Amino acid sequence: MMQEARWTAEVAIMNKYFPQFAAFKTNNGSVGFSGLIRGPRTGREYTLIVKVPAQIYPEREPAVYIHPRVGLGHWQIDGVNHHPNGRLSFSRQWVPARNSFANCVICAIQFLEEFDQ
Image 1: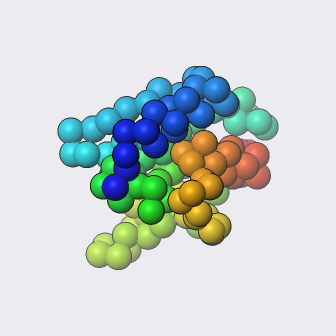
Image 2: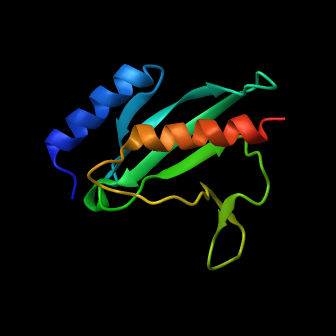
């Protein structure tokens, strides 16, 4: 479960490296950040949301959502109806003591560098 000190540190890191992102907390207990990223090739604006239920953070990596979607085949599939659930699927090791929301944003930016066409 996320402690207030961890949330404060996450907000400080994001404000330092990604000041265009806004922190949020939802009524259902999720926390995260949202902001706009411009595609490096097309100049198109993408909305990026990184969020996770506070009760499972930092043990679990936040989900990353990019709208509009690019890079077909890189989105997690819902186990019930087998449709993309909107969450970006990328493979990396999550280390709670070392990784942060900012790391997730960096992964999304790297993804856009490859698939923004």
